[in-house]
Image: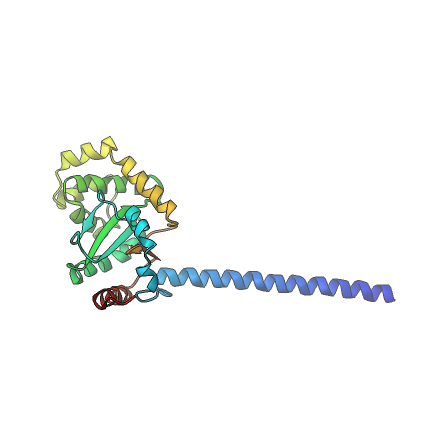
Length: 236
């Protein structure tokens, strides 16, 4: 009888331990899912964090803020926002009007640089190459806007129709795309993104400080406003 009680007690301890482990496991899943959802919705993003003024970010910014990628805004702008993006990324499509609104609101204060991080195999890579071909003709931003405005209609097969609407020379564009001459440029962006810990798109770097996911317009305005205020007052 005493032996039976010990066996029962032993199994009860094992069962209790398994229940505790299961509880911790599912709690962890829920936590990381919630955190991931927060990032996608732009939550948990601080306003003008002190890290934005960290001198150690200077070396990072020299790697981020390239001269050969599409840019918008004055070169001497006090704030630089680098976005790693994919023309086939649905969250990047959500971010498109936010970027455009910010470029209008802060046209003298913010410089935007867009870098490629194609995630969806061959189609994303080809659209990234197409973006570089549009940049070659100095028509990147009209091309960029068309790509997101008609994201559900554009395919590789009908792409030339929309590039013409964006003002590109069709023959020169097709020759550029077929040559794949910007493949190294795209791969260099991918290598930099991976070295910087970029896991998905869009990923933003504001003066070198990283934010992930869909950042709402008001959140961006709060961050930018806080950074500009600190710069104007000289506070750290």
